[in-house]
Length: 309
Image (cartoon, rainbow, N blue to C red):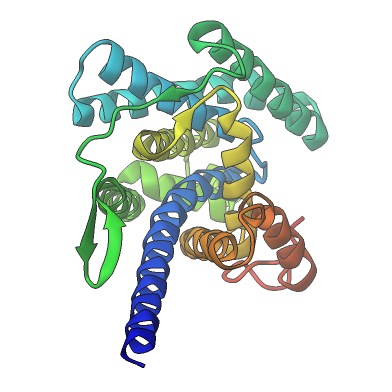
């Protein structure tokens, strides 16, 4: 009897450890998905365009950080800012070559197709610069990968750093929109572009900065995720799907919705993989997209009365 009781206690402890690990991993992954979704939502709110090259901007951010930190020896924190700055520049290039020229003379479908084409161009550039599609690069961890107990949850040390940094980026993002002039201009343009033009806001310049900020957030997410995953030129599409699922679930017009959608998606993925089957982790995003489009067409926090597809 004592042996059986001890076995049950060990099993309960093991289940609690597994549950705590899945929760911590889900929150960490969800925070990163939220950052990717934020970039998508910012661009969509201002331009009504889904940036299909957003995943490749994430991918570039990770590879830039790897080049600065692992190859050139730049400190991790400084490499983060440098990679984000490079991603910001790529976002501006995207506006210049794929969005602005086509929006003036072509249809929205042409813009979307241009974004898809640009994503393949970016992917080809990455393969030429950092390796083929089958080449995966390990980003060196910032701290020891050993697990620790934090608030009753068993978490990996690197995951705790990533989670904290993701929260800092989200807070900085919110303060940017609330306190800076550029952020207020972006909000005004997103709410009503015609009214923004009438009061003297240069909408075309706002669009440029919008693409830049969206890409910068994706770059920040890439730098944070790089130490807990493997970098490859094809990682962009996977993260785009995850971020898009989070944005659709939260509402493509809602910044708080992007954060909530990312957290929910991250938790769903890890719980499904841990308790049902690991294969569900890869298809969870598609299930979330289908569920949201059927039952929550405007998302959890999106504008009511307008169906977003």
